[in-house]
Amino acid sequence: MRVFIFDEDVLKKLLIEATYRFLVFDEKGSYSLPLNYNLTASSRHFLANDQSNGGEFKILKYSSIKRIIVDDKEFFLS
Image (cartoon, rainbow, N blue to C red; front, side, top):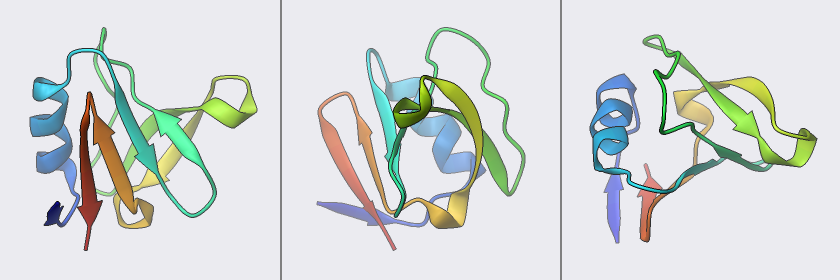
C-alpha cells in the first residue's frame, strides 16, 4: 500500500504511468480521468468524468480525493 499527499505534481506523474485506467474516489463516488488528451488542472482543482452522472465532467479538489487506482495499482491518500 502506498500512502501520499495528492496534488498537481502527483497527478501529472500518475497520468504518465497510466496506460488504460485512471480512477479517483472521494466520499461521494468514483470518477475517471481521460488518458488520451490533455487534462484540465490547476494547483487546487482538476476535471474528471463523473461515472455516476452519465459521464459529465466535474471539478474536483485534490484534498477531497481519498483513493486512486491507476491501471491495477491502488493508492491511498493521507
